[in-house]
Image (cartoon, rainbow, N blue to C red; front, side, top):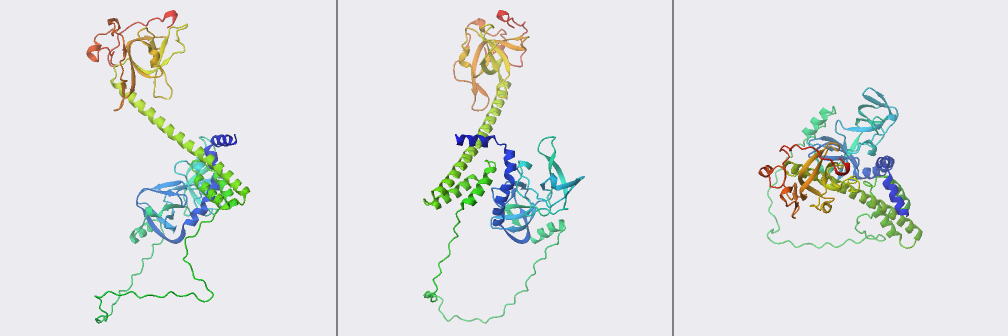
Length: 483
């Protein structure tokens, strides 16, 4: 019962609200990771050789700020073997809150030390929680406004998208960057108005003294025997040093794990680092052993709660995948119906459904033919019930109907007297095709189409093509006074 209540509560939360609440916590949690992975270096210039994502931190868990185009120049001021901290490309924007600036025209000036947020490339301001600068922007900094930000259409301005100041930094995988040559770097820095880097001094040419030829004393044609080296004994009172192995990653404390749990719990389930935190809890449970039952129970409860969020995340992903598949199926069906409509000889094509109004009790019994493939089906026409056809077995299926159509003026729909009904299905090559069974047709000559010329324009007994003129006929009155 408790688990179901927690699950329903999570599903009911607005993603935008969760993202806004989780922003400060997630930023603090991941900032330490990013700073620990890179170290300050003397600035140098790099080039992105391909379409490269620039992230808010030195980890793939951070969202993408922008995708660098091939040939983009950047300056690096901190790096590691895997990540590089770079300046923002020219023209890239960052978010700043409306209460942190005073606006005049197209410029904004900070009224206090303010933090700027790195924009999330796909989800906008509400989900942009990463700081774009290691430190707040000083008071009095002038920024160029790109556009105002509103949470709802026509609502109040909550922030501004401004051109990134010089303090803004992003992170790019080092392997995706190429170090610029001295010429490329000098040209780039000159465009920015920065001092050209001083070219390295060329060393003086080395003068090699002439050395007289000396013949070796040892016969180099004979193999050389290795010389044994006796191990050096440690000094008295000093133990022999063991080779240092890799440092063991410490197990998280209850307090540290609880702090991380509270921050992760506020993040959207789709992007939160749930699996990683579960793994850390499992390590802590294994390390606790059976000595502290209370601590072990506390850790196991947190793992159970995280597992619920993991299950919710999987359900959300499956629902999104199912929706995408359903949309794709609907599009394919619409394309198939359109292709079939271009070549069909049926009077009417659609899904056969029972009629609630014309149910045969007070009004004559008829069947609805409803459009398929759209957001909501609409009635295309009605098929009269006859003794020659068992239409009940086609209910809920897509059918092609050949028959004589008469327009009912009160309904503004065609009433079809059928003399052929086919069950249709998707064909392998696209479009629709009749199911491999004998279609229901009327065998008597009186059931043939009223216009014998149809046999010369299509398959005998298959009705009229859409482009052939419809024979004029007066609308029939429905039995029992129905129209």
